[in-house]
Image (cartoon, rainbow, N blue to C red):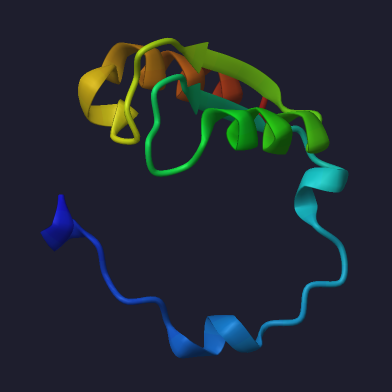
Length: 84
């Protein structure tokens, strides 16, 4: 997994965002119930703040896409089915 991550493009840090997309577009959030990298309470707060459709996977770690691929795929499919 470490080899699949790449450095962020430096110009991305210079971008000016005037309106966050989550304020006007639907979003989906998967909360990994046992995430030790990002506190699950913080993930829940993010989801609530963005009014996201939230799915929680109890016992899932930060690498939820590896440990629970079916749940992740189901969430992606649900989000895709609502795309305009």
